[in-house]
Length: 136
Image (cartoon, rainbow, N blue to C red; front, side, top):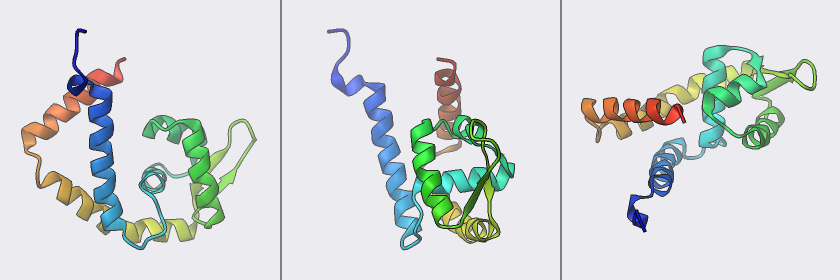
């Protein structure tokens, strides 16, 4: 065997993702929103109303993951969906906009906790890793 299991990048990246997700969960506390939902809402806060597939690409989410989260966010009144069935547009409602604005300091606190253990070189290295893997 060419590699041993400890060298499996897929497993290692998923493990890191779980650790980072736990930090976000800790900071989100009692807010009824998951990390994926927060990411979707933050992206819509930045982009405004856009086609649903653009958010999926931007966040690198599977269509099923995005759809499942959108159902919950729409049901909660945080996101509106409009347009034609094959190219729907999604955007934050006024309530969704207010929710994002209230969550930004919490998101920043989670980011601060993560960045507290990473040096500038770590972050640059991660950006380089991400860029190279994105080419695959």
